[in-house]
Structure formats: structure tokens, C-alpha cells
View 1 (cartoon, rainbow, N blue to C red):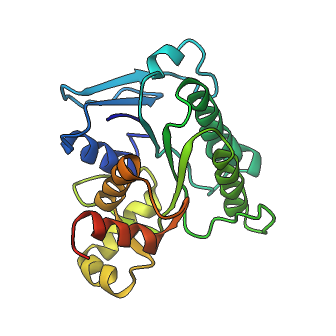
View 2 (view 1 turned 180 degrees about the horizontal axis):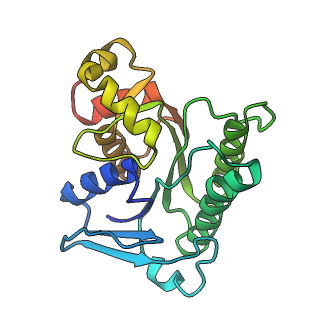
View 3 (view 1 turned 135 degrees about the horizontal axis):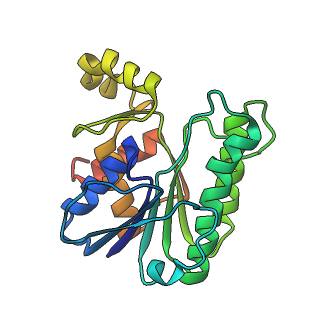
Length: 226
């Protein structure tokens, strides 16, 4: 399997990249982003591209891949709806549209979030925008899945770019194991997200939109614990 990842510099992207590089069935990983990483691995390559809304000139490099794991996004804090939409709607939809043309039917997994509003009509701006993103991606010629994690625990040193999230992780770190047991519908991990993405790309899933509890249940199935 050959995989493309958008957003490898973020916490989720870091975790997904780790799982992909560790998986013997993944033959090649291509990271696409606005800045280079320091990753060194024989099956890892990257494209540094400043304008993710325009992938012309890069399309030949994106051909021949089996799956795309889209982990790029921005918090709504301090952003207008237009600015938030440009990052969290326009970029994933442009990428999805491009890949659907180049690799029709490929698996495309978008990391959304719990509380996303599929009706696109709600009062919460970020939820409304992500709902539109999900709907637009699901309409494309892609084998698309929307993952809606809630609180994500970094498992192997992944670091969030969002300051408030870093603080929250530091505060809750001592009780993470208990939280995962008590609130399976609220807490998941970077490791589980990566493993679930790979399994969806290999074998498909029970539904197109997976909530946090679905992610955890599928991760346990993949690990053979249920």
C-alpha cells in the first residue's frame, strides 16, 4: 500500500506517520505540506508546496497512491468563518477533488471532530464548516471516511501545535488511562487513529462517518482484543 499524508507536522499527523512507517504493508509514504520535516526513512518522501489550494504541477507526483490520510486543520480560535473555512474546508476539498481525478476510488480519510454538524445549519461555526467539508468529500469519487475523534491522547511523543491543547494534555496526562476506560466515547489516542486509518484503507469500515467510540471499537478489533 502507498499512502499520502497531509498535515504530518501536527499532533495527529505525527502519530499517523509513525504508524504508517512501522507498518510492513505500507511500501511508501508521501507527506505533502508547506514546510519540510526532519523525517528520515527509506520509504518516506515529501513534497514541500506553499499553496495547497493549487496542486497543479504536482499531480504526477500524487498519482498511483492507494490512500490519503488528511490530518491538516486549524483551531477556530481567533479566526473568522471565512479564514477558518479556507483552511478546514477549501484545502481538504481541493485536495480530495484533485485526488479523485488522479486516483479515482482511492481511500480518503479526513480527520474531522466530534460534534461536527452534518446539517451545515447549526449555530456553531466550526461544526457547521466541518459538516460541509465532510459532505463535500463524501460526494467525490473517493472511498471516503470521516473520523470524528474527541480528545486525542498523544502516545509516542507527538506534540500539538495548539497551546491550549498542549496545556490540557499536560494537566490530564496522569489520568489518561482512567479516562480512556471511563469515557470511551470521549478519549482516543494518536496510535489508535493511525491504526484505524490503515485498517480502513485495507479492509473498509462499517460506516462512512466514525465517531470517537467507533474509532476505539475498531481499534480494539484491529488489535484482536474484541
